[in-house]
Image (cartoon, rainbow, N blue to C red):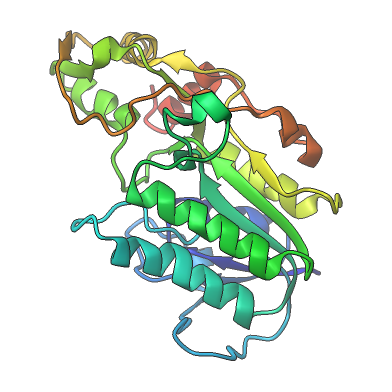
Length: 287
């Protein structure tokens, strides 16, 4: 039986991953911080606290570590807060806990509008920057020591997600028949993946035997414009909400999200369409 450490296990993705691994009969150790109202019993029963400020953490050896721990938002929007969770803890983890395979969860937010000119990471916010730095830390400090897989995800959607996103915004307002405000005429393309699909991709990387894998983009097999996603969702929930276009010079992601998922087949993962991922989301609300 393989022994797996899941960090960030009380988070949105981590909780769902632990449930999957327990179902598959793995020996799972779950690291987490704040227990949420929806945190499952299988996470609570395996939950440990880790002081990442200490050296020489004595947790024994693991076959696999899956690092789901991530600081996505900050009330102060400070580099100190993002870098501690996404960079310092990642460095402490890879230097103090032994494993044969290390799977690190990252984000497509490492890309920005400038990336379309050179197809390389070029983050334009502190979150994206901290996750890109964490990728480089993992590659430099873990590369050559064990198998390494970095999984980059677009927007991950699901009912228990705490952080806001435009899908959640549309559903919350649409169910109340309130107006939906869209920036840039809703013409930016977006790629989304349901949390169950994110977990399926992580599990595929756990069971993969390929030694040459490094960075893999995970996402839906297509991208849709925000306006089309909005119309699709409003139609599915029979909403009477009206779509309004508003001006905003501070749009968080001012570029299209086209995710190159061509190498996800290396871990035998093939993504669903945006439409199918949205259907998985709506099923959680009985739509």
